[in-house]
Image: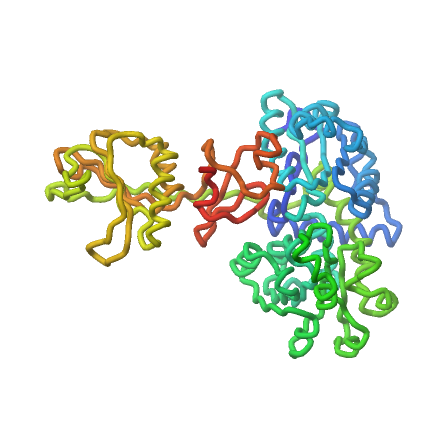
Length: 531
């Protein structure tokens, strides 16, 4: 973390941003939860609270809510006021956003108003805080000012990490802060609900996790988040309705409901709204099946016409959502304190460290150059040049042709050449071959592009009919800095339609797909390309 010029502003967490729950290490999350517990106890006992507070006029907080919010906005407003720092509510409806001013320009201007700035942002666009953290970080370095912090107060249907923080704190509270095990049922609109998406990583605070996903197929958890849960070691079960779930015996003692986000659904799904709502709405007849100590939670607000937790449950022991909502103020006060510099000096766990694993994805291999190999252009063997072999091997013929055309177009291989789809002599699988005679160089940038266009190919450099160098081109660990790529999520901050100049950037997953750095949308490597 950068050392700040102002020695009065040097907290361990200052300059950090929280766009997703994993922007805090597990130790850092646990620190936040233990401090929240201490703050709640101190308030209940009317103890001195000064050691929790920032009390520094050099710190300015901005609440920028481009999307409407009541609970998140008000709890953050009160959490910020608790710290006695400059507080600004940015009215997006009357701002230059309405004149199509970019996020970058707006926040660069605001960042110069305080020695240190902290932003809480809610938007319909996804990945905004992650983009601003990068862009404003560079701006701060150029200007010689302190890097601001950004908190994601909810972005589109992506994530809501501060809701996740208050949720996990509430679960821990119910569990007497025992982190060994949790059994939770996630119920409702799991497709659009960003609060349940955050749980794919947030539940990692517990050592063992059983999670039951209860939603009809149209509202099921997106596959990417299920893969996350599986990679985190969660035991996952899926059910199409509460009724189906209660027909078996292993029932969770923590239920987390979400509302059906009808405003985000297309007409094809809306026509089934009644059936979908019924499948995830709790009924009075099921109360007797709930074991003692079971609690229901909800990020709120409930839909007053079609609440998945009906109002008759408000006065029952199942009501955990009222305490949950109250915890939003406390957890957010602590998070602001950490990023604002009043808390963190006593933290002694592991900070978040981004470990970039070095991957040798352009691998030079033995050539056996003494043995001629007849790569051909038409019927004539390639004597000098480059041959790209094994393009799309094992895929169907039409897909392989797509790979070949895309590689030629993106790599600008407008030279004398030949290409085709052939059967491998070794195993009979189809593969593409691209022969480029007289092309005597293929630089590293083109090799990187080739790895992202047609991974698992072989590139042969041929001289005097012998393979002088041979490279196996594997899947790259990330795809970025190419003009021809873009995230295909229209709600992502990096999507070209928003003209925000956020550089498209993708990370490879364990299943060889690529997720957007900003919005976490999962892409096949073929889909990141615009051509």
